[in-house]
Length: 350
Image (cartoon, one colour):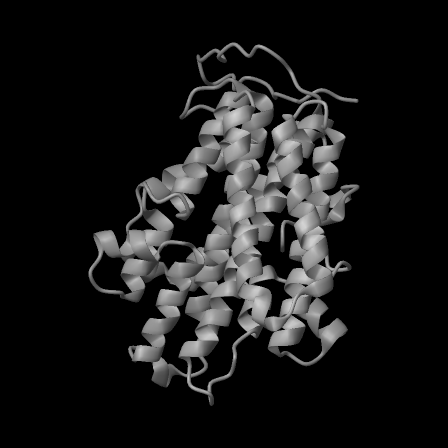
């Protein structure tokens, strides 16, 4: 088994890497990365579906239930249509939450996260294993007995289980290379999903231009903020809900933990700790791609993003995050994006 490839020091930089105490097998690093990425993916799907369930109560009965945009967020609408045909709440929830043959469903993500945890059982803490095992068993039970009325409680439990796992990992595991690989996986996944849900709201969600600026439009933007647990924090710094202010908060805020910029900054910090470089320098393609993206975001304004086009910007950001994920896999796990053994992992919800 190959060791983690740390790359070559950039000959153009007169900078030496920070000392690293221990190397990590690429298999182990890969498992840490994807274990956390799958748990974060499951939590985000639960967030999106839960908010849409609540939104159904606020929208008029003549309004389409708008489940199609949620499936579009995953990038798997053609797969849904081939398996389920009709778009309705029951089919969408079954596909996104409980379809064991769909690799990005909540059930499939937690099963794969548990498989990755099992492969590094001797490295993670016993508390981490207990949490992910309880998470898995809770979903297995819910899959058999859930009803439409119990879904809000279920999705709340999924979010809480994800938070507990992250907290237990932070509190019981040494913050070494493995922890940083897990942190990086979680943050890249979170940044990607924030970009996707914001793009869907802006470009796809409204059924009519007549809704723009109406109370129904405001409900949609509130639902978007709630899907990222951002509503209360947004209200603390902004009194009015406007598309540009919401977009600025979810893209460029330096302190909110689900903004795209915050996620990528923290992912860059973990990547520097893994590679042994200082911020602003790079030794491999993953560091260069992530550092460059963070630098660009650090000097952007929402006016520049709007001038470019919000949809075009967010679509480009999704491609950049996918590219960073590909380069992380190539650099550290020895996996080429075009010939990965685990296609689902490299898909990254494309």
